[in-house]
Image 1 (cartoon, rainbow, N blue to C red):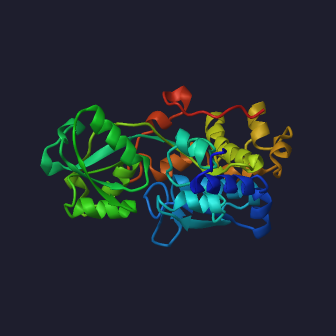
Image 2: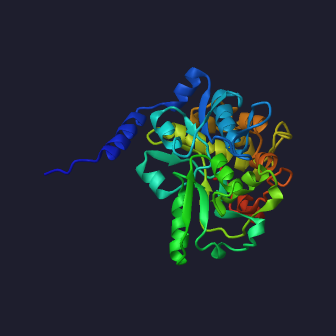
Image 3: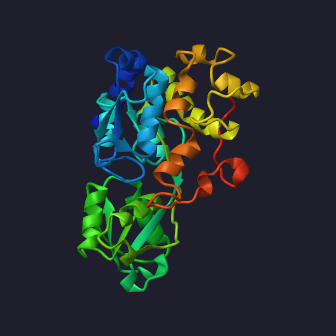
Length: 335
């Protein structure tokens, strides 16, 4: 007798079947805008400023894809999503692209009908505690209560860490990072755990940021990147190479400030559409790379203005530096 497939599996298969017939590029170009799923508000990655404009590394990823496909980085409809909502929104077609500090894992890659198009920020899970507790290491948090977001890899990594160290803990779950911060600020928990970049961002929004510290402990790898539906390889390639265009531009010394210079490097010329047929392979206009770099900037420009040392987050490049500068970031060749 054949085994019956569970409803959840059937749902994923249905999504895969639908997406296999999809042409997201044509859909985006027909409606004239990109629906991009972002967080409900995370400083440095995707949040609105006083004028209501979306800013951050993830928001820039949305704009890069809009610049590549529509020729205009401003043609983005930002869709705020909680951690619980994000994958359903992408699977159902509510958004064309998910760019929301989302960790690339084998389960998400292989069982949810999704594809990660690269890594736009290498992160790791850490802990924020009140300075008054006098805690200097995660190993001192045995029996503590943690504020954290539901539906994230944070829950799983926390459980792994405490189990492997023979320690116990309690959880106080919330739907958004803002709610976890509120719980931490009001004393509902002893510590807040999340990606370190989020902790630095949330600390800047506390009434007194100096009252909290981010511990040095990092207990997991959290490669964050843009996500698309499986079954549309053309769109997958476009998103992947839009990210690579920003990284490759930094490697090649091309920025929004000097993009009209007379570059001689053959790879730079191919990236900018001044030679070769790379655009034809992607199904885009010749200026797709030029539009990304001129309107959004290279990776360093995006990093510096959103999370770098000149911002309130003051995050160093670390792993997110280029491979030739001590990091692990690089783009495959433009040839």
